[in-house]
Length: 540
Image (cartoon, rainbow, N blue to C red):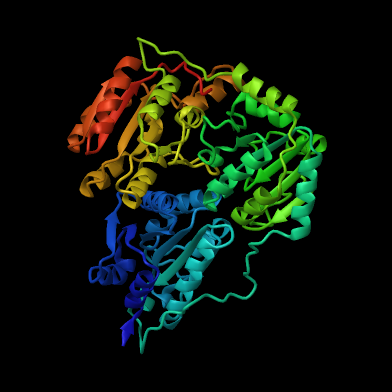
């Protein structure tokens, strides 16, 4: 005989899971007890939302699904923001929650919450397990759904009595066969033929690279397509890192906080090739007006995304790695030199902003300095707010990764995501960049960091403001500031770090910041660098 909890653990072992990020409680204790008998390492977080963020960072760095665990009621509901964050950015996640005994469901007993219902809008699928015998099938399906097609989170909610229920034997299915779930991988040959013809006829083509290219591991295919076609490339925030910033084909990030040169090139194009991008409002403010001026080729593995925000004249549903590979092999370089001169003339016309200062740290300059110091395969996790834009516009991702919450814009993401990424890639440099506001949403995870010996580096841009919201108040609300001033409320971040036994330092200008960053990157332990930033320095 074998219990449901033992089956859950065996399922994870069969899927090659090495790490769990979670926080225990009574309703998930049978499962936790079984974990003690395995080599699976549990990372105890300080708040459940961060378990999902750590699992997300782990998934994005490793290429494998991240697994987070919480108990019933408030434990499960605390996971929701992290699950929604993963859903919006298409990150493969398995969320396991404990639940009250099945015969008590619907009675509003202690720590009961309908978590499958609450998470329905932002999970690819969810399961409320009613029989332990179904657990092997459910886990196999969950991992399959989370990692195929457009990736995303899957929730498995397991009542306590199901964890304790015993069944006769355990058999893990070799594969998942789900009726109605057959993601298409090969692009339709006729649509690819149409796309090649449109590229041939275009006078001002541009490629827009989105997060789908990153998720598909199609970096080399994208570079080959750009090189063989000669078409310049712009990226959404989630597409940062596919093309190196110093690539001769790369224009920069588009959108409301993007490069002026990249936005102008997009607006002047007569052909836009959208690659794994959903064209959200931060990327293209008026997508239909763009579609009226230019022909749109939209490549995505999720058919629901094609045409959702912008008319797609040539839709191609399929695995973007396979589609780009086919396009790269067949495309011809017909791009006019006039167009190349125009777009890269714009890039030269609008250089990066900011100059080093002696009275404070100019963050845009500092991020460029930091980028030059870091290794080729380094991972940068940016939080949300001004720090995110400073990082996205100025950090040169070479062979590494740029992690951030692009879809949901979740503050407090960077530190837990960086911890997850470092656990996945312990030999890589991993740096988290955050503002003083976003850091205070996740600073409890310094305990997790130090307990597990995770030597990430954290940079806090302290301008004593919720900077991006304050910019909105300046621009749209007559400079009436409310709820955006952190002054006289921040802790001494250096002393806070030291209280955890973490080395820390403060930089008052760019020269100090550069020197301390070099020391920080040479350290083999966790380090926090606090940068004093003028609150008047804008996002862009």
